Length: 265
Image 1 (spheres, rainbow, N blue to C red):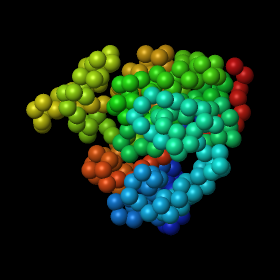
Image 2 (image 1 turned 30 degrees about the vertical axis):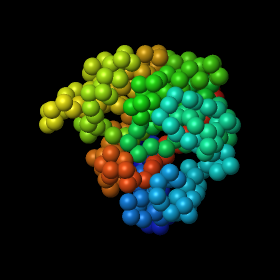
Image 3 (image 1 turned 120 degrees about the vertical axis):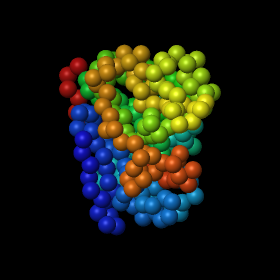
């Protein structure tokens, strides 16, 4: 696990997982120009931040990542299961996942507590970036991302490497019985949630555990899944959190690019 240091007034902080074999990064809130609740590195345009500050923050992140802004794919996320190719993406395209096998493209998904899930098939160089909130996980966004990699590029689930970025951790994610029931109806085991010992009728949901279940059911090997262990709620100095800050929160990006060269299949 690596992280860059943010410089005053300059370089955004980027987090990376050494075991994940594709160019990638997870942003923190450090290294931008936003103020107040969005301090410093808010990348979301859907919140009440200064648009010029968001543009400057995005410019800094893409520069630090070495990305071409004209070849950076984003989507309008809706907690669904639609996954699109980078060439089909855009700020008005409603989707929660992006795929590509073209190293000239950078994929970016936006999160504030939901799970950013990055995937790569090292043999083909195909990648997927997914935004996985509880509704998306229940609906099957993880499965949809894998199906796109298999169907479009001939990827194999057992070859996929997965990186899980900063998100709300199980001990900090309190939900009601209706959410737990939705996971049960979708076939997830009871172990993804447990009763909250401090609140009757409430539960603590582990979204990353549910993501891992979905990955395993699709054929991804558990030893190929890497997680930095970052909790957005527990670390307010580094991370935005929609839940912790009652909606007055910025947004992070998870960035991914197909590897520049592909080893033989």
